[in-house]
Length: 626
Image (cartoon, one colour):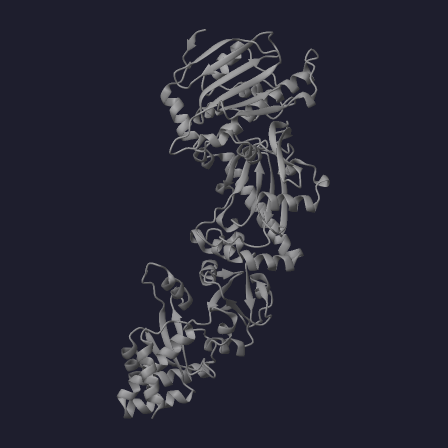
């Protein structure tokens, strides 16, 4: 028996592979099971094409055995096995894969699924073990051999005594350290969990002897441990089954079980794509938001599989942020099992799959909106904010994809409507889309600026989410109709006669208005207005930043100093205007008090905080006590 060095790779490469490519030690079992599955596939393929090879599919299986005392895990299969040369070639050279070579030698007609393609997965077992021992007998050789290695120092190959065709891998598990608890891999429950998580859909049975605690004497409350062979995997994934064989209940149960939800999904989306990049996808739109959905702790992503073996539990690159609420799985034979997050991010196939999935989700939502409005409204009330966030995020680059999916509350209809529906029902003389923003529908209804628009019998979209103002600003216009905030300083709804009348009022009282502006300082202008009906004052804004946007910026942890340019408008027809004119002539000190009180009133109506409520309270008391 001769000690051999790894042919073409160094200690540095092996260290780099273990520490960099695989940061998650749990996947060692996935890799070894996948290799075993490949060996079973090869043997089954040989039985179909070579009459000398006789094997029944029910004989093909993978077995796992645990020995806690000796700290051993054994993974064995009844597959094709390896010759001495194949052992040397496949396990003596890192990144040399017998599975890949086998796949390349097959014709397109003969093609079957081979999971392992790069040959580095086997060595992931060194992350959890001090020694690996592989005993194998090939279908093509009467001899059996044992390959043994303790890592980077090399390996040995010697003859063995193995009667049956197949491969047995024995891992000697490392001792526990302060950082790592390796003993967990000798626990039945842990192994069952790892098989269920990563290898549940391997197409051959994965068996293990498990211990069950059975009640043997109820009166004495006596239990005994009984061992039995259990198949750990379900083998056929639901997304690979024929659709006609899967019921709604099957989909619902799969979703609730896999994604730990107590309620069935609102929508199931099943998709199978063949072409440059083939894949199957089973997606779910939840009926309610997870408790942490609108927090930084929420992690988006779809479970990514290749041929039924999980590569990544949550692949974020498969979903845009605005569809982050979608749960599901994607399974593609065109992605490698042995792949890192970094490589995935650069994968052309993954980007193609992500683009197709995004399009599929969007079309399904459009169909739901059209054909099942009640369900869509239920969806939108739960996840609509995320769609609106997607409209303005990334400088609005996705607004055209999402603008027909978002909804706002209509003042006229008193329900949620789409932008398309708003434009369709616009009055003939209306050329803009009016909206008003506030913390609730009730508060928006009471805004002074809403009165003038309603008097013209124009509909108003009520924006109640903090993202809404940013979303409509990003869209800018819909079907050629611009969005106009009713809090804008110039709605241009007055007649020429009304405009002339208010112009004279402002010009005739310019000194009064200037002194009010000097007293307040926060506003860019004070003016008389005829847009108000019953209300005495209001705040309007001009420029790109609205009052609602300012509220959002003010609520952020870091003061960004972004403020709206506000205008204090006074109802020229209200008795307060005459009061101001009189005080300006007769009592400047009282005039200043009224100015501060009116500005504070306007801020309260707009939902803005008053800088010094104690002072305003004192001023009000002084005024009303006279």
